Length: 157
Image (cartoon, rainbow, N blue to C red; front, side, top):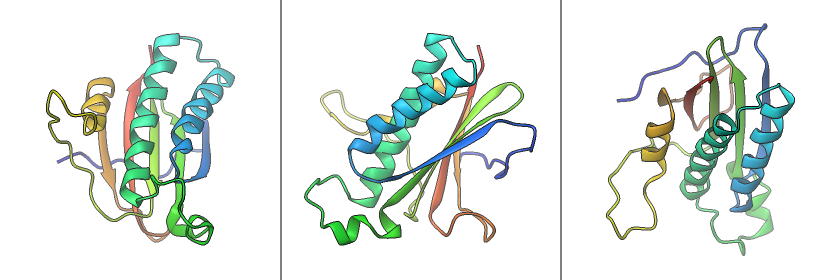
């Protein structure tokens, strides 16, 4: 079972967040957001930025899939409800980057083995390979309303 992680950042840490509608284009937007934020924070190592982009895209893809908004023909009223939102939070810790992705789904993420011919199901395997640790938690009352947060720690180069 994945470990738990402290929810709130220390006031001395850089932290930024972005809220998106859980549609397929959220994956591309999340990758661009993480790269731009890390570059603005002074992280110039291309491999580290690439790893952070891949990690966030896998976590966001899982959120989009968990919420069931893969179909771009979803009704606008459903898209604009709070159940369709995801939030990305990135925080610089002392020696690593914390990437968190919140969504309103209640199901715990499960790492599974994908078959050789499978085109899906490798997201958490990729996160496991890139991250120092990863896990999930269910937010407390003082945080985001319901759902779950899946997080990953990427060591700085």
